[in-house]
Image (cartoon, rainbow, N blue to C red):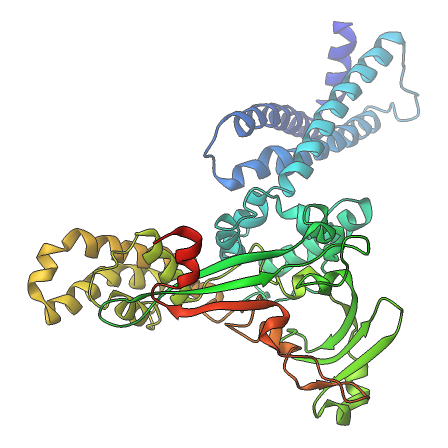
Amino acid sequence: MLRAVREMIAAGSRSLLGLFAIALVTVSAIGIVVLTILVLTVEGLPPYMGMFPFLVLPGVFVGGLLLIAVAVVRSRRHVGESSVPLRLDHRRIVILLSLTGINLIVLAISSYHAVEYMESPQFCGRVCHTVMEPEYTAYQNSSHSRVACTECHIGPGASWFVKSKLSGLRQVAAVTFHSYPTPIPTPIENLRPARETCEKCHWPAKFHGDRIKVLRRYSEDEANTRQATVLLLKVGGGNPQSGFGTGIHWHTMSHVEFRASADRRMIHWISVQDSTGKVREYWRDGDEAHRDSILALPKRRMDCVDCHNRPTHEFELPSDALDAALEAGRIARDLPSIKREAMRLLQADYPNKKAALAGFEDSLRAFYGRSDPGLVTARAADITAAAAAFGAIYQRNVFPEMNVGWAAHPNMLGHQDDGGCFRCHDEGHRSSDGRTISQDCNTCHRVLAVEEKDPPVLQALYGP
């Protein structure tokens, strides 16, 4: 047996090419085993580390095997044995089968982990660091941070897996040649329907009833006055047996189609089919004059992401982020005019992120030094903590390298920031029989309190 092994190795090592090929196979095989163990057992390794045992070295391994075959053929020709058939006695057959089996095991393990690695959030978000940094940062701070990217962007099934890999090749080319747009445009074209991804976990038929939502806001006055807006949201949902056609989630349970601008911030045409099958079309005021060009736009059936357009990659507005930090106590609420000063600092122009982060505390100290010098010393710890909170907010929302600023990715959920519900519910979309899509506030919620310091409804719910 050992003699046969030596003969086969000798056949491949009669040339520099063969020796090189054997070295490639040996080193890459050892590297695959060692690095796989490291990647699977050691935490905190760089995200690029997984590329070597799962993507790079398997390619080197296969290339080495092919080179060995080439070296053997060339060696036989050199010694005049090309016309003599290889002798395959039982020992050589056993060795060939054994080595083939080992190679297949190595490649199977590498292929499995390669697919697993390429579908991990670390690969999606950190390998192409500059391009995906904004989205990956938002993902890590979202309620879906434990859901793998592929669960939503690909979902189950071979066809979408293949589509994603083909799309990935185009993305690799764009990153390689730096031909990608900044910021990355949204919404994503040809995203898989939410009914096949989101609704695997979030089932609209089970959304029922009304829910209380409390919005805590802080004014930009000296006292940072705390106020509350209280809404009774008509979440709705359900099915024909339990109350179909109620609340906000009526939109996903009904058949609603629309044609819109590429960014979906302007809805031109809407079609609604009721439970009897009757269809009513609504045109945005003034758009029927461009009927042909609008009807040439792609028609889309409304689903979750048309309202929840940033379900995972949500970027905050500075006022909302500061309100949350004040409410959580990360910024001292009794620092005079801290909300107003924070808004000024966060929205100022900076040459880069490093300059912004370095300037927050100095600017804040300078502000209080002008208005109340004694406060700078007395509240030094609070000022430092506030500046750190500003930095955390800025770091997760502003990415100058990708041209991502405060308004780069608007959130369409609700109607406070950038249209949202009012893209359709504006009393400006009309049907042929004169009906409009209502803008009545009570359609989706009831307002129980608006910017009140101590709303009676909250006293009733939580006590004084």
